Image (tube, rainbow, N blue to C red):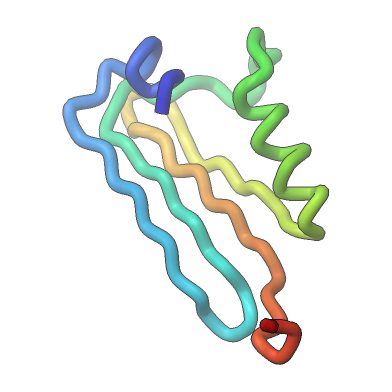
Length: 84
């Protein structure tokens, strides 16, 4: 959220979380300026998110492009039978 505020120039942000077929899906989407995924990342925000997702055996997917906004999707496996 901080990176959206600082860099995206977005006017709308959507945060959605659902459990779907044994997977927790968290989606963060903005309508900002996007960025080039081919360019090296300069901060630790996305790398930290990726590392945290991987610690939970999950994945982080980024969809973005210049003037297309950005969507970050985190997918984490969820076993409902493991609940206490």
